[in-house]
Length: 121
Image 1 (cartoon, rainbow, N blue to C red):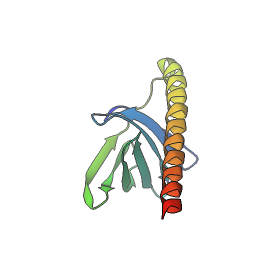
Image 2 (image 1 turned 180 degrees about the vertical axis):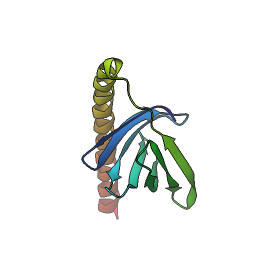
Image 3 (image 1 turned 30 degrees about the vertical axis):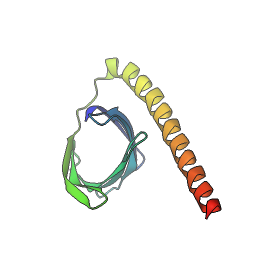
Image 4 (image 1 turned 90 degrees about the vertical axis):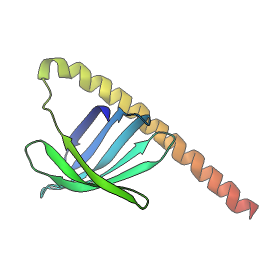
């Protein structure tokens, strides 16, 4: 993953970035006990389910699943620098909104395709 940006707010996790496969978004939850559940959506492609732990000091780890495939994962969170981060957060927020809109459009398109297939049957 390149340029990964995550936001933790009130038990919710969201974020975006890009990797060798393409652009992606993250959404999920982080419990008070440190349990992490996230979904990584590669825009126009597949999703990856993540489940694991947060140590409270910047380290997340666990297992990812793509259908029957699974392996371990780890993310080390670097604390943001406040002065330069204001702009970074604004840019990431805009990119995340766009990514969420793209995911929503893809989901709606898939739902319409499924409805069309159901009607044909």
